Length: 244
Image 1 (cartoon, one colour):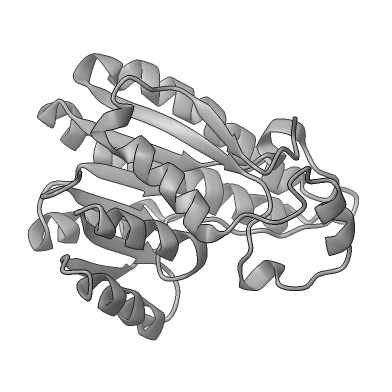
Image 2: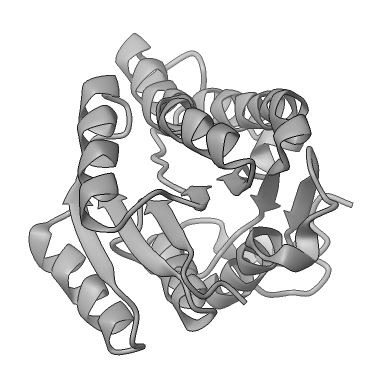
């Protein structure tokens, strides 16, 4: 489905990002991974993708830093070629009730989650516009749709992703470039193996379980495919019914 396509996945060294990268590779794409994680984690992810017969490169990149993103995209172009698919998955949390939240807690989350998406789209935009093709998929959250106590910064950043997605979709639709967002609920990763209140959240999910990273990845792969060519500006929840 994606033979010969170049995909950039931010936050791609582990967790959901890695699952997305592997799924896109299974569908034929070559992968550029952007992350601030350890080089060992990056190389491990590259090895898994390479084992699927696809080209892959890992790039140390702070998506909140415009110049870091600009340099990474320049290198991706030299190493792999012009990108076709951009997945903005990189994200952090600094959860606290607003009363206790520090300015740096707010700024850092907005910087990575929202400005990071702006920074990468800024690089992808002219490439896709000139090619008259491309897929942009942004990872939002149900927290950005319904809010969540203790996550003023995270919810604001993920709500911002929705507005960014719809605006980019309108700007690039005439160039045959689509831009969509997905809004996961809770996903089984290292961060959600065990935490206070987990049972309460499980009880709030009609399907009574967290999503698997691979389930998130398959939705991203669909939106990145030719089959989703008439879908743009959408926000698709994948939350087991939690936000119904």
